Amino acid sequence: MDRPQQAAEHAPETEGLAHRLDKPMGVLGLVFVLVVLGQSLAREPWLVTTLTVLGWLFWAVFVAEFAYRALTARDRRRFWARNWWQLIFLAVPFLRFARAFTLLRAARVGGVLSAAVRGSRSAGRLLTGRIGWLVAVTGVVVLAASQLLYVVGAYDSYGPALYDTALATVSGEPLSAAGGFARLLDVALAVYSVAVFATVAGALGAFFLERNRPDLAATQPSPP
Image (cartoon, one colour):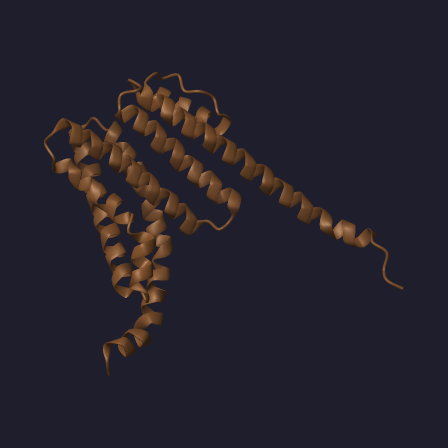
């Protein structure tokens, strides 16, 4: 039996296993966002060490899952065309071994962005409802953006960064921090807040439209 035929026979089994991994990996992705956040805020040596070890363990699981999906994909060319960008986020944490301060800061920023991307994809895996998915992704955006502001030094403490970011994400309120990065992130969060408002308005409109359809059907005259 040749290899293409073997791959065709085992494809349903491997795809089924990959599908069953969606929810566990989704939960790990959301937890990973909190672990990365904890790494930036932790000050006790034992807590820093624990969170660092957890972060690397989670990352090893993500790498293993990505490698498994790549090896078992039916159409590998299509898989790499759609998922090549994930290699960047999987490679970013290894910049932490660099000694240069600039690269170390870039690694911390990249780690936050990687966790945000992983958390957003995890929300998509776990939640099918539009509102639930939007709430989860908005939470990830708030945590990631506030952490970025804290990591780059736009805020001296994390509490004000979290508060300002939450307001900017939900209502479009400008950030109080100064600096080019803060201004750029301010614009991005304002655009996101508009998207959130439009999505919520559309979902509410669809809900009330579906709710009123039975009443409209009942009031229509029956055909002779």
